[in-house]
Length: 458
Image (cartoon, rainbow, N blue to C red; front, side, top):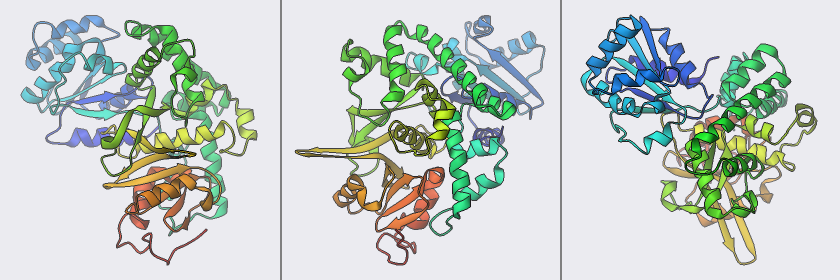
């Protein structure tokens, strides 16, 4: 199954001034598999797995001299390491923190050698050690996005077509309906590589659900590794609760009425470090960077993967297939989860930008815009909601509060449409929001700028 990560790694391998690569992300997102796949393009590929063979950590005890380390690896694996022709992969590197520090010396003293590393619970170790900032390239590995899901199903032509859609190239109703049907499959299956592999092999929603359960069981086992910081029971409660509060401001009492707020907060922090949940922080929306006006106290949460979220909620495919409205009841949270994932991936895999939303509490009224994105230095509000343009009261309020914001986005099942400064974008096109924004409202010189009357479709 091809994914954008594969292309990124291939380009990294060709760079003249490349740095050692450190892949970060939750368990089972495909970090190791991607590096192994890259290794097939090299003359020889050597993998050291610090979890499988803990004794490999002894290589980094004496000193961190990369030349000595590679000589000893050659002797142990009986393979010659040739800079420029060999790929050295240090897997589960969180089990050997000194190996993380050693990446600096590989970059400084053996820059020709391709070195990649990965770790699933890496964040817990990175806070304890000196990270070689500026000497390592980080890559954030997430579940397959929807366009990658389509390619994995062999729908490459459709994926390419979606990349061309916009208000100037609106898909016809039959195509629009077909893509929405595939999107519903994605919202149930999700983008975890193992789940997707099972689905493509068996064409069975049941076996996909079985694999989702296996992944969730792995995460639960990992909770024991967090125990020095928070109790397993508390982490489990947060883990099970998050899918049910997507789209709502976090209130610790709703997560666990019997626990103290500080305990729930600590559990959320640990799950975020493990890349299982992600905060969506409230921010003023006054400008970029969005982090400048963000609150540490007011936030929502999204889960790692929409398919895992659905499984934790107990969703069965039969029930999901029969409910055709993505914006009714709990399914509205599913749509908001999906949008969060697509926006998180929008800026590429070598950055880990935060997610943000806007809210305003006033006497007698409240307002909230589900997400704020930053595209080419401008704030873009994104409301996840069905219904007519006139019903988007919070989005209208945000645009009136910030008249310099050129365009607001309504993300839903609706096809492309436009009303004043608000444009409807179908959920499946959000991964191309930056291109759509450029062509419509991102630049005042564009033919369809917000004040232009040449395009207005309700």
